[in-house]
Image 1 (cartoon, one colour):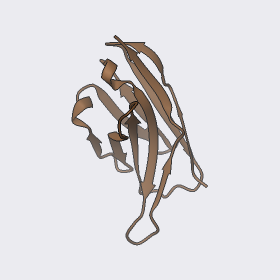
Image 2 (cartoon, one colour):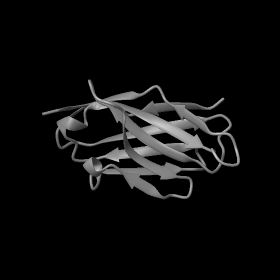
Image 3 (cartoon, helix red, strand yellow):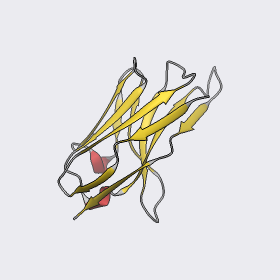
Length: 120
């Protein structure tokens, strides 16, 4: 069973920074994609950034240049460094890991979420 545990959320003023962490445990296929998603009140969940086990990254346009995703494969941990935060970044941030779909069974796991609140 795969588990994801997020940490690092909190309250920060606009322009400030936060660093989110996602620790993964369990039987995780080595070739996977990890990602951060967020959901603001009244809005749909959206992709913030993703990173493959090989290190390829993808960012939402709204966070490009401000957020940086990274991972430590040896520790099965993913990070999201968030700088120049804006009130519109306020949301619950979810960690996600997925793999498979072609040769092996598709697996997707979500964390419980961590709240990020940016005050103006």
